[in-house]
Image (cartoon, rainbow, N blue to C red; front, side, top):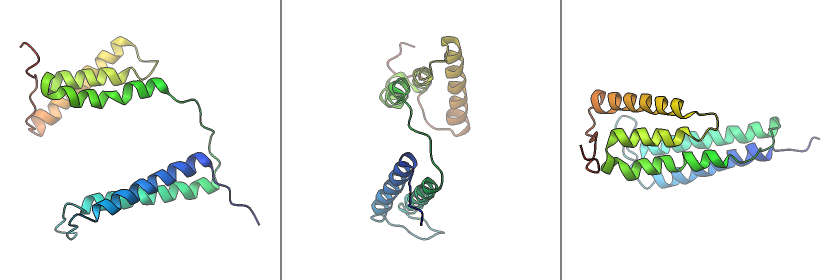
Length: 153
């Protein structure tokens, strides 16, 4: 009989997915679920939590069948730029406004890659900013202040 071997990296990821899904499923049960046609505030979070649990179980099963790659070095530069970018956006969107906050957030996140050049980062940030303004301000009509009170114009 063959011993059951689990790839530690994929097994841990699957367990984290399943545990996170279980946590949110339990939390969503305290909200009103409603019915399929008349969904309550807990219905959609419960559905997403169940999907996350299912994905975690699939990853765990796959971890018993396929040997994964060993973990490489931790990408500290990526974490140093990607993680603070949304925090920066949240702290500055009311003061700077939507346009400068999106632009600077994209600029910060773009430098997570060592291959990103300054001109390419500026073009990327301008493109994402233009797309975001078109979609969120004009198409969806969300009431974002495009330029905030911290700016002199």
